View 1: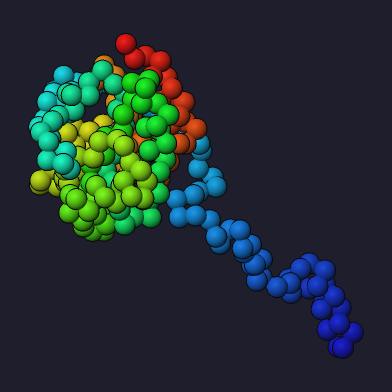
View 2 (view 1 turned 45 degrees about the horizontal axis):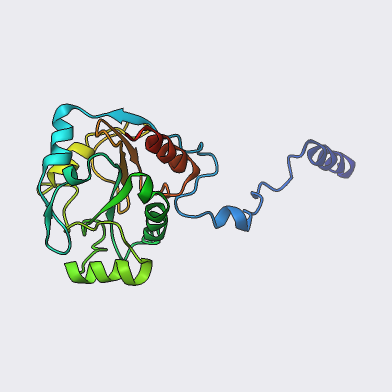
Length: 220
């Protein structure tokens, strides 16, 4: 009987029936991926969308005020390629301010401008007054691009500009509410086309820079 028992054990070991089923330990690199990073996600490919006449009217004719209290509209910037972005001073994405300012400094003379809209709808991360927001941008990032009054990008009090912009599909075909702080919309100089760029895509992403260069090449 003992020889049969030993033979059975040998067969079990040979077939692997007794091997450990514990999973291999996860590497530290896999545990420490940045929040927005997905190693299997394809590279960002922007998609340019055409704006209707109604959308263009909402975007360019809706009245605005700057943080300094001056009346204006995006119509004052027509003829330039615009990057419209909702900003916040206490967000994990706030360092995008620096990348936005770098784009402004590099491409302003080619007919480009960032237009920033402070918004406190996402985690209450832009609680400051107009003067505090203005000082934050200038003191921390030497911002020279226009900062507009604080608005709401989503919901019942959504600004008319964002009524038009949020109806635009992103590269996946999804439209609807702004997802978070620093969602960007690149609008062509003729005002007829826009590309929606989600918050996690950096302003200096290679695909964004390529898109911006193509838009600037179309400027009149």
